Length: 272
Image 1 (tube, rainbow, N blue to C red):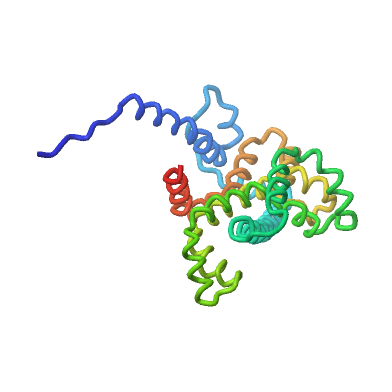
Image 2: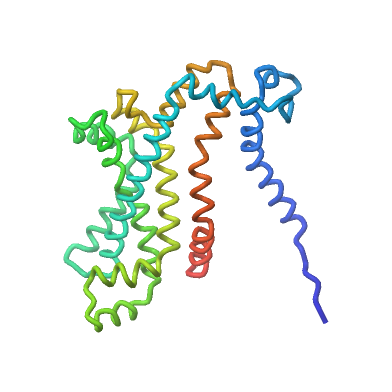
């Protein structure tokens, strides 16, 4: 005899309300990007635009060099993510699988950096990067170290059975072959999740690129959005069009890594 599934109606309603509350701003932003100035200032507010005005997207490129800012953000974010993940994998591997003098002190030192506000390190970083102002290296290099990413990957490396590594050692594998052929393939979901978080953090980074760049050639998208606000004044529909284009890479990245993200969350829950 089949048993009927029981649904928790109050929980379902709360989750639906929460989903609507989170999705609503994005839907409103997308619809507003097609509105005219009259639609934007109509009261009561109109949900749908009277006509779908694609000129708002063209206006973004006319007001500021949006394409240049977009390319700069994509390039710097991808490079920072790649270097950050590479360094974090090596660091996590050393923490979990290697035994060396000062290991505990080094782990505590890395962990302590998570409690230092970024504003405290801005001046020292700027002095260290002296000579690299208005360069891609000046934007990229100071932001590639992340203690959070290291320990996120470390937590998944810890779940890999040590017997796999011991077997690889018996087969004559060195440290690098073990890392690339055994450890990394078993932690793809964690690395994918860490990559997504890293890219998102770099994509929306504002303070450091603002400090280290003066030339328009090297400005990133968050800085460009500030100039767009100044140029577009009260044309909110143009700002919405720019915001829609700005979130596209993040949405694409989420679609690509969605399965790995869900898998990593599931594995984390199983571990706890």
